Image (tube, rainbow, N blue to C red):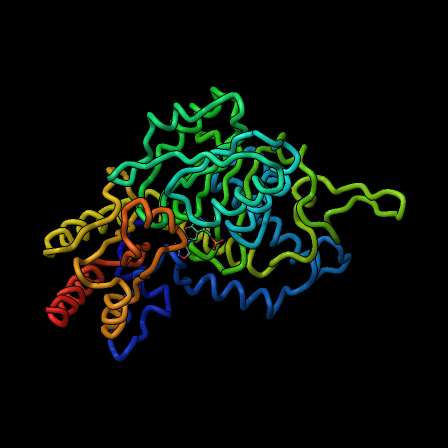
Length: 406
Ligand code: 7TS
């Protein structure tokens, strides 16, 4: 399918509205994406026709809900090319997926003096769970430095490995800088040291084809809501050898095989990690989002966003006193920037007056702000429905900011 933005935009009812009396310009896709009508319809259809609890009813409705839920698991498996659908665990989001690995894999495999490696460009959700694990186990956190361009310092990375390195976790793409990391190469190096790798795909999955077998990552995490699906849902992919050896993260219904007061045995994968009634509607809505992305094609989406990124980078760079934070060669459609002498929050407020939604702040990546010595940035991030007019509006908005502060 051709990436005709004008046609695709009509699939997103929210985009047709005004904000502050101006046509809405939505440029905060890294925070969350808008939803196409097919996802909204899937949620409505599920609650109107198919709502039942899954994996337990013998009646038709429950069988139908269970099938729809499990069909999405297979869809996700195929979409990210996992070996088996058992390796796809539905969780609340990328955050919960990382917490699951830190708690279950971490507490089983990490001991005092072991080293956990992350990078200096991580979202807080890929920092704090590891810090807590370190506090609990006596392990030590090691941080891969990043360059002035916002790229991973690969020389420093290689030197950071020791015989105590037990786990590596880093972002496939950075939410604050846009950097796409050389994940496959980094994973190859980690594996040469026998170190398993968790890849945080929250900012990559919606923007490029992802193949977990090609990447050879041990864990991959993602959030549905950043990829045109419902909120409150994410995926943990893990190699079955690792997931099979891990203890449950949460416990309760559905994750057991048998329960008695003497002994409880656990269900097999993937159910072992899906305690309680899951977000059934969310999973079904996410299935619709994946079908939608598949129909357009991830290559097409990536290509379109890359075109927007180069257009926006050129136009923003021409604005005097504007400094882009994050100038890596390989980026997703994320541009973080500061304007000399004007606080990002003031910029965000003035842009909002013009109907332009961007994120301002530390983007849950405070160490990135510290690295670049800025209190905050303005961040414009693109999705498949953004167009050149959105970027023109942003630039006009920034000229207005400069006029007001002149
Ligand atoms: N990892 C990365 C790289 C992220 O950007 C985010 C969210 C998460 C993990 C957590 O995802 P969640 O769905 O579990 O919340 N990032 C952002 C952001 O950049 N602005 O708002 C949320």
